[in-house]
Image 1 (tube, helix red, strand yellow):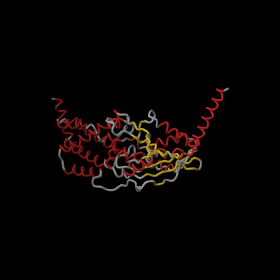
Image 2: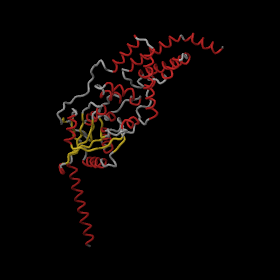
Image 3: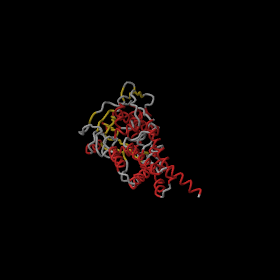
Image 4: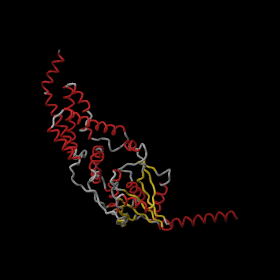
Length: 389
């Protein structure tokens, strides 16, 4: 009898504790913090994090999926190979806001409006995921990042109840990335060299939310019943809200490429031509490595390989040793590849940076000049004659 009473007391205490815990969780407030872009490339796309405010235990913490170890000696090899690990970390809200203010990055806050049961589940999921054995995840900058992680968990928890009234913007991932690169055009140029046709498919409003700013804006139009999932944004630090804007510069990639094209037209030297050929071919070799030698998804099926052509590495020695028949064949193959690039752009198979086109024209000018200098008919006659002898 005493044992039964003891068991009853234990069960009663556990029940009361669980009731208090649920009550406390219902009092907990969840908000989404959206942060402006930074100057570093990894910060150029903004940032998203969840704030948890619990009055009962005076907790005010940020849960942040954007943590990575930049001091890892293998950081860049891992990044290039597509096996980059990020993790969920926590930080006091005041410290988080101060850090972003010091980096001159604005922060806005929106209330997350979810049913009580979903809100409790979301808090529990964040706490569980924060544990050392659960906190790491493989980063994918389009489908598994600081924004998409938050989008996806709400989607899973409220799949049947979410209503999307967001207009489709008729944009691709490349278009959206370009918006973030307006003030960092050389980084945008590099992205357009490296990323393939796989990012040139039109995306849905749901997919657009891989970017923090789109998660914030679309979240206001996604509803559960008649209630928006995200409330109106409130600016919570002193940094003015600004967005990247395009401005002209004489050092823009497209201007540098135009300068090179002018030099090509005016200054006809074989050493300069060969220098361009080697540089272009080496970039092409790097693209082949990224395509076949890494686990990166969005670098495969990259039609830039057709104008950043590794065949130039074969062409230079063929021309140096006056192997005209082989040189002629390689030049024709390279020119055909460059024409295919133009068709791929025209029919929107892949998007290309506007700065690529002066470079493509420059390479075509060099190729046509080389073909003219070879005098193909004489060349074929001479080589055929040599074979007979």
